[in-house]
Length: 220
Length: 203
View 1 (cartoon, rainbow over the protein chains, first blue to last red):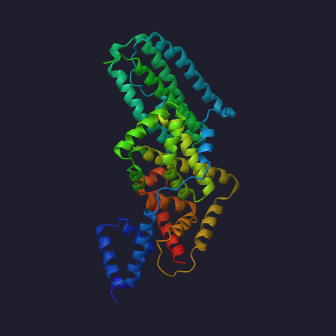
View 2 (tube, each protein chain N blue to C red):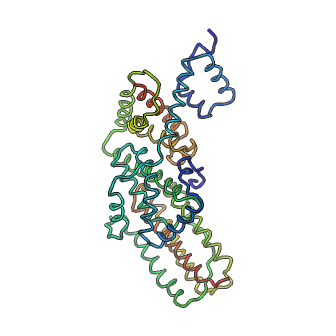
View 3 (tube, rainbow over the protein chains, first blue to last red):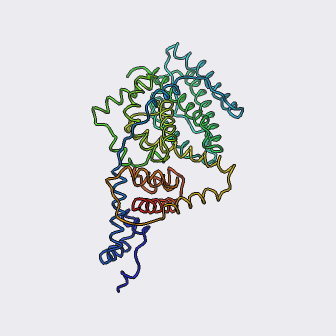
């Protein structure tokens, strides 16, 4: 009996082999053993069959009947009940609404151009805390749109009225504070769906503010 | 970053062709303005893929229905952030996985308040022990239903890693990013899932 026949290869190593996670030398040893050990070769074949079958499973399974009707009710506006711990965040959201209504709406009515610098990161936002993956995912979802809209405004800032820009920037600072508060709260309570909605909602407001500001730029 | 994840093969398969992509963009634009009818069309074309993933990740039809609903509620709320760089299917796919693991972490915290830490280990061991009986012929891959049932019967951690790696097609480092698991842990869960499935399907 050769060395290769003495010990069967365990299933974990066979799995690493088919996943391509072994070094070239390790892979060569596995292949040499499989060439002379029918039992291990058969197990490897069954493992490959399993993985192939998993990949071939249907991509689509219809949701149960009535699922859309239930969803339709959930996406309709409805009153929500909040616990006391959410009130401070709601207060920040209220400040945002005030800033938006008194600042941006007035600007829209006056049809004046405005300038917005790319929002500088707030000092408090850079403090170290660990965000859950889902919150980072929300950050990532909005980062591109915010960057793009901010860049456009920054490039054309000279065409706009500094006084109105100041109001928009003030609103952006308030929104950034609210975003930062929501992110910090999520770092402490990563799975709170209301906090996730608040974070996403604050990003929505920021994107909407930037979009409305962009709409005020004169056509090129 | 999650945005750097490679497209898993199931999401690639779901990507619409160029003309479909234009139609999808138009529907997304309408839905972003609050058009529920447009969102319903997007839901009906994407829900089967989301539900298939939800069903396999949860292993439970009721939980899968709830997860699918949560995914589309989040999608509705965050649709303005979707810029159309990738297919909507890929974006929904990521929301599904993120929502699943967010719920999982929440459930674990709730469970930790009423159970000792060893309880879940014992349950996992019992599930593993249950499936370690008999070992007869080769896997009959024609029986996809059997495979689905066997996947659903896996211990949760092993099932989720198996689905993400072997069914969906994520790489180890991507799953580590999504789940927060160390690569060594998820590798062990993957091996365990495969071992349990082979044993279950060979009975």
